[in-house]
Length: 320
Image (cartoon, rainbow, N blue to C red):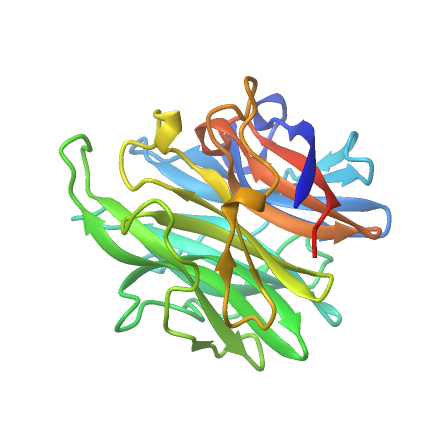
């Protein structure tokens, strides 16, 4: 693949966001309209104890991706109720047009005691063209199971041949390292299918091979079909010492498949990497691919996990 960077297109610190959020625009997700593109993202508020809550906001931007038309000022989706899987945050909200409906798959998380967080995946529906979303219920549609024991998240849903396909991440272990104050999670990419978008059948295996080591963390899968082949972008990093060490932080990985079953990892041909300097020189993370007016674009975050916004790239070429 060959991507051309447009640079950073949104900085949350320069706009007034809903829910008293002042920083972070993480995991951008696109919804294309006739005259503009709506980009949802997760931002952060500090609660009364000083801990973060993750909220969903959005911007509307023109199709040249230069002029921001609107920034959401109202709550897009409420956080989950007391004790629910998404009580403390949504990261991300993955958007899918489905006939006359707009679905929002919730990457919800809540705090734990012995470890930082746990998470599951839920579903919400919008009846006002994506301005707001309402859950179909307080519980998740995909959650932990026998061999995927915790930390379900990062849903990305597409329909192929009448079947809903969801790529997601699941936790495999928590590890304790001397350099870390708290246990650190390890997670991999999984896959599930559904006939109605609500009841899901997990494939039950790690989809993408590890590159770094057994404790490699894989996140935010996003898939698009081009030239009779399925292309997946995702981000990956070391399990520890990744927050400020650029050599161990997130990069974007790549895999391809001809049948949505067997995936071949080939990071060397992903076609995008960190810049020499500027806002994305230390890390690339949380990719999202989408089509707009016949072209393919990539949204992604840079340094500090999207603290100061997200950027855009356009696909110039894809081999084979």
